[in-house]
Image (cartoon, rainbow, N blue to C red; front, side, top):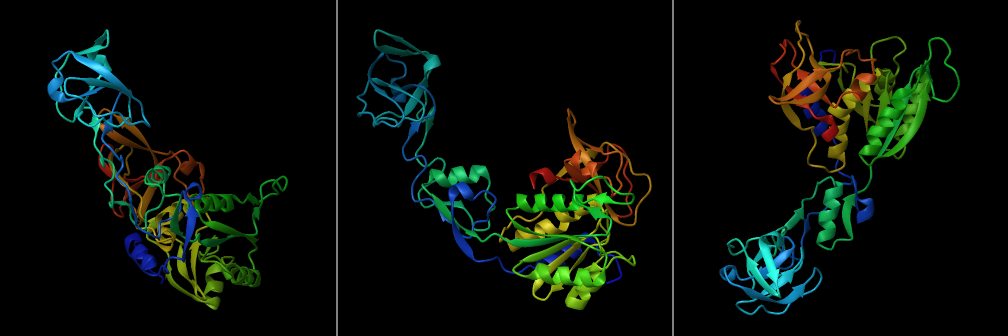
Length: 399
C-alpha cells in the first residue's frame, strides 16, 4: 500500500466495498428531501387528469376560429363546463378543463369581445394552447426510480400523483473524529500559541448533514495511541461508517492509521491526487473506515471525491459522482505535476462560453479557497495548461 493509487482505481475499489443500503422505512413527503427512494414510484393517475387550458382565453373548436362566436359559458380552474355547441365559445381560465367539444384555446390577447360575441384575430390549430391529458405523466408511468435522491422538485412531482409518503432507505449513522493536540473548539477562548480552531469538525458535519446523514460527533482525539484506539473503537458502536480527519500521514504523531491496523485492516492508503494524498480506507471490525487528511482544503476535496460517492452508494443512490462541465481555463499551469491536481475555481460565463478562474492560493491549508470557489478544475498528472485550453470542471455545488 505504499504506492500512490490513482483516483479512478481507488474509487472503484472503495465503491465495490460499500455495504448494501440499510433497511427501508416509510417517510412523510415533507420530511423526504435528501432521502433516497427505496421503491420505484408509479403514477395511479394521469397528470393532468383532463385536457386543460394553458392560459386565460376562450375555448372553442379550431374550425370555428374565423366565425363570430357567442360566449355561452364561463369555466374556471376546479370546475367543469357543459358540452360546447358548435359555433359557440366558452370563457376559460388557465388550468380549467376544456369542455367536451372544444379542441383549442384562443389567447385573450388575440380576441375581441363585444356584446357577448367573440371575434378571433388569428387562426387556430387543433390542440393549440391546450395541455393534453397525461402530458406530464400517464397513468401507470414511472414517476421516479428506486435509488433516486429526492430534491424539492421531486417532492412536488410525488405530491402531484397523490403520494403523501414514500419508502426511503434509513438514514446512515456516521461517526466523525477530529485528531490533533493542536485543536481547540471555537468559542473556548483565545488561541494559545501553536493551537488551531477545529474547522474540520464543522466542514465534515455540514457536508454529512447535507446528505441527510445522522452525525455522531466523537470530538477531538489527542495525539496518543491509546486514546486514538479507544476513540476508534467507541466510534464504531452503532455507526455505519467512521470518518476521521488527520492522523493518517507518516508523521510520528499520526496514530490513526496504526491503530486502525491494530483494530482491523486497511485496503487502501495514499492517493495520487493533490490535495489529499494521505487518504486511508479500510474497516474496523465490520464498520467501514475513511481516514481523510488533516488539512482543511484536503478534507473538503477528498470528501467530495471519495467519501460522498461512497456514502451515496451506501444510501442506495444510483447517481454517485459530480457532474462534469467542459470549460476554458482562465489560468495556466506551467510545470507538470506527479499527481492529478484538483484546483479550486470559480466559473465565469462569457460570450464564448464558461471560463474557469483559479483561486489565487491553492495551498491545502487555505480553506477560503473552497469557500470562494464553486468547482474543481482537473489537471491530470503530467499535464500542463495554457490559458484558453479546455479543462474538465467538477461542479460540486450541483452535486
